[in-house]
Image 1 (cartoon, rainbow, N blue to C red):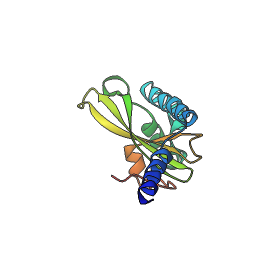
Image 2 (cartoon, helix red, strand yellow; image 1 turned 30 degrees about the vertical axis):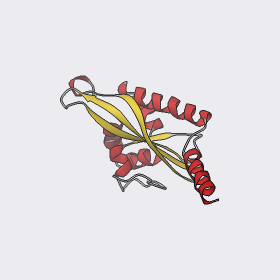
Image 3 (cartoon, helix red, strand yellow; image 1 turned 45 degrees about the horizontal axis):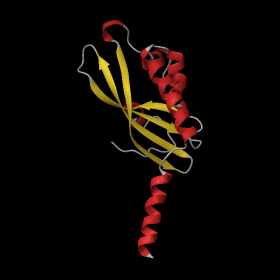
Image 4 (cartoon, rainbow, N blue to C red; image 1 turned 30 degrees about the horizontal axis):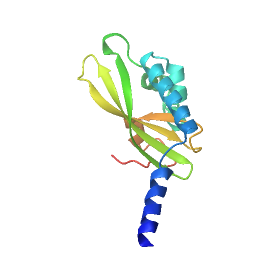
Length: 149
């Protein structure tokens, strides 16, 4: 009986930490738009796909801070993001967080892996994104931060 209970709990934990095909599809579409808007320096779309708490925070700092944060450098200082790889998912009720490692390519810095976070507050229907800096910036109020540094 105890073995059956343990097996049932393991199955529950495995399946409770997965997304449905529809949720996964929505997330993948939004993630693709997020990376594309960043790489193409589409500031408005990039800000629109960023978590609303991040947008509110940088809006409160003024126009120049907002533009600086949501604009990708062009020319020799440009940065491009490639190949997001899913690393881990955590959830608490309808709040779902996913951590991705993404390849960050710059001209003046060595290429490196970088983390971005996808967050849904409505059980995977809508997804918004945060950079690793914004995710851990305590001045940005998030309902939950399920990952630690």
